[in-house]
Length: 531
Ligand code: FRU
Image 1: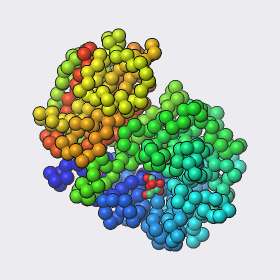
Image 2 (image 1 turned 90 degrees about the horizontal axis):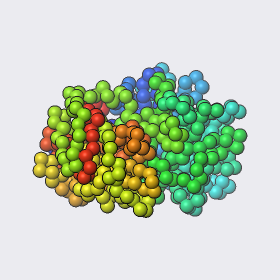
Image 3 (image 1 turned 120 degrees about the vertical axis):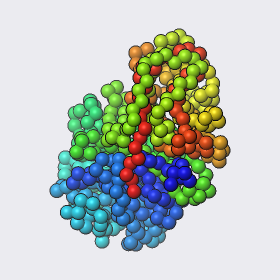
Image 4 (image 1 turned 180 degrees about the horizontal axis):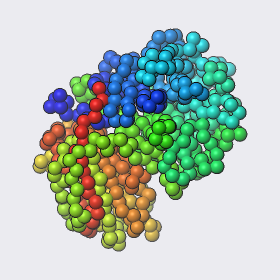
């Protein structure tokens, strides 16, 4: 009931109650999408982890099934942690996942569907040979830092390869294993890649992207028009970082394009972790799923009885510059759009607040584009500064020449509460820097929540490009895409006044220079069928 559960999402994935974290083993089988996820059947905090299971025809509406993988053998008796699915020849799904064994060691296990003619893949059978990979005194693998196997890929030599996240002292790494039959795995002499000082690599993901265009390819594809992405979830920083580079298949090594730029690019500059991609052979796209933790206190999570959501699945591809990835919510989510509101192009004067009426502001999809002309008004930035720090120092109430301008979401009647997503333009060494911020500082009168501001620079040129922003608003989540998917920021907010039909939506310009809104389209979002 939304009156006493104002923060439950209407179209972002979440189960009816309890704790969830990482998406696991996503795959498409017989026209159905399968999502597994880390789930505590017993409460709203982490623990007792099983693989809960839901299926979908469109990545938006989901049908829950019984947990697919749960502790049942000595190799996973203390927990079934994250892992991935691979489609073996003959279209046979296989799952590799981390088990916490009876000695509390992290080991890798194998499971396959009991009945391939069941499109729901309800029952999974574990290998009696489990664990297939384990720490030993010979391999010197740290038994508490050895987890989260990737989707496997097939080399030209007919051998499978898979990565497992790990660390040796402070050196984070993706340990590589090879196998001919998917059962007997041999550790490679060298990890696929490692970085000194980065700490534990959780949930690695390694996949090809085409150097041109938005189409995705199967994880085993390699060749002339292919680049590779290595993503790791850094336990020390709690963010998902990725590198673009080359995969040297002969040496089984990943070579990042810019060794100096390691751990700079992120999928999302807000709250976002433990993500994973899979190849959708139906629509020929690669899809990214990710977990968003709460920003509320543990006591509040227990009170509301649940914790954690997943983002809207995003299509992901390489930007034509080759220097970053682009993400965009899957097109299927647009089926939920209702009651469009379109505003005519208009100038938004400095200091103006423009109400966007006629949408359900607590459950909406908003697209807005700005054009700026008075670039000479841009504030000068003498020293390059971390964008998140810039956003927290210069929130939505701090005026500059060009900006802040953007959206106020979850705004209460008297503006006691609001969350702002906005641009601010700087000039730095004869170049323009476009900052995108998500400012949660005023999002709630309840100060027990984490109100951290987030931010990133968006690689757009305000001289020639429009500054576009799309924000998906859903009761306690604000998921924003700047520069047509070049910069993503996800935030969690818990307004006390601006809830349900009390929430309001505005465009605003708090800079001194006028900006032009070239497009403003907003929709109320229908509720998705999720449980
Ligand atoms: C990431 C993670 C994984 C682990 C799982 C346990 O959030 O810590 O490394 O497998 O969650 O639930």
